[in-house]
Structures are given as structure tokens and as C-alpha cells.
Picture 1 (tube, rainbow, N blue to C red):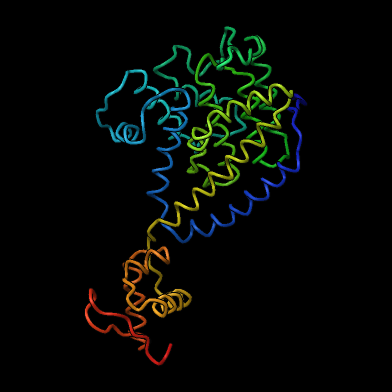
Picture 2: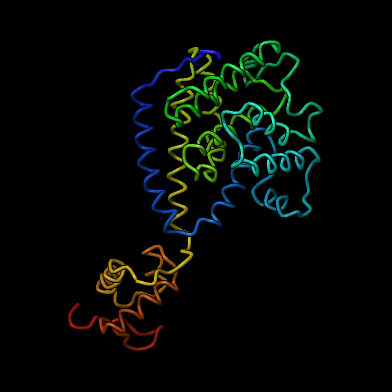
Length: 331
């Protein structure tokens, strides 16, 4: 087995970002237990597919991608439609890939490019170069070296004990440097980083990192160029860790807007106290306003209000529209 180790440096910035991401992961564990994320996860899968395709020039937005997923007719070029269908197929298999298995990566490329390339799922047999606004920015290794180079990087995946957050970023860069396929390299590189991250924490399967990359597309390309210029993936690792950090923060923000699947049988006492505090500050506050402040469904607040009334802690004076809340016994 190869002893290859891709060149990169663990910087203080890298360690800081890994630490911040770890803290966010702890927050997400709580959120996933508390909030309904099924709808959000479906939305984020669409965002992942849309983002990774738009980076490559596909013009479909999230609505069009959703329509393709749902089997509806959409307007667009045949190539764009096939790109969406291929990405859907590749991402549908995401939770079944083994990130250490080179054959699984080839399978992912076959899913992705099935209707777009005659040799989907096989490495290239010709030279390729990557262009930028200033011309060619990277000449990939010759095709006869590709199998060996890919074997090296997968050998490293199987043996490395580096943190998987870092491993995912290093692999992403190394993959783009090798550029092993005639087409679809960017999409597969981003997909495989998600596959690696998913093996670290399952919820990464639904974090739309590709969408965040799309929103920072020029910085993404610049990070690739900077890494190429320095001869190691460090600049790209730092950039992608920042992208992961931002993606998790966005996921937490969106998750807190979700509606709980179930209302607990025993209403949390803290939320009851929070409702009383809100009413103290604003006796005219509405149920919907309370729900928005506390980040829960209005049905949940209605049940909480009923509990408070049963405990003789509040009463409603007047109608729901024109009345106000009165806290009993000075509470």
C-alpha cells in the first residue's frame, strides 16, 4: 500500500476553525432532537444540487430542480435537465457511499454523468487543463498518471488519522488537482467532501455546503489557485473550513425556524416562565407574537397558555383581539 501523504500544514487558523465547528456540531445535536428538520433537509438537498450545478454554469434555480425531482415538466436545455437528473441520482445514493472506496467514487461519477458522457464512471484518457479568467490556471497530470495518483489519495484516506473535517478538505483539493475525469470533476469533488463529512456526522448529508460555495464562488476558485501556487492544500483547507463553519451557522438559523414535530407531554417549565415574562412586559402581546419570540409553533403556545390558565397564573381580560393578559397573584 502507498505511503503517500498529501502536503498540507495544520495552521492556527485551521485549529481555530475546527474548534468552532465542533462547538456548532454540539448545538446541532440539540436542534435535531428538538426541531422538525425533515422539510428543511429536503430543502437543503435541493440547495446542494442547485448550488453545485450553478457553479458549473447550469441556470436551473431551486424551484426548477424541485420540479425535476417531482417529475414535473420544466423548460431548459436537454443538457441542463440531464445534469439535474444526474446530480439527483448521485446525491440520492449519498448515504450509501463508503468514502474510502474508490469504486464508489467511480459509481458516483457514473450516476452524475450517465447521460452526458459515453465513458461515465471511468478515468480520462486525454490531457485536460482548467481555465480561469486569465487563461489556463492549472494543467492536470497526464492521463497515464491518474490511476496511480487516485490510488495514492485513496490509500491515504484508508490510513490517515487526521480529523475528518480536515481530511474532507484535503481530499477535495487533491481530487481537483488530479482532475481524473474528462468532465464533472468539480461536482464530484464537492460531493465526495460531503460523503467524507457525512461519515464524521450523519447530519452533514443535509448541510448544503455546495450552496455556500456557490455564494463564494470566486473565493473558491481563488483558494484552489492559491493552494496550487503554494504547492500544498493549506489555503484551500482553511477556505473550506470557513465554508463549513458558515454552512452550519446557516443550518442552525434555519432549523430554529422549524416547527416542532411533537409537543412534549410535560410542558417545559422554563417556557412557561418565559411566557409570563413576555406578558409582564407587554400585556397586549398576541399568541402569534409569543410563538415567534420563543421560536415554537402557535399551537404549542396555545397549549402552554391553557396550562397557565389551569394553574390559575394568568387570565384573559376581554376578547382575544381587543383584550389583554392579566397575571394573577402578582406573578
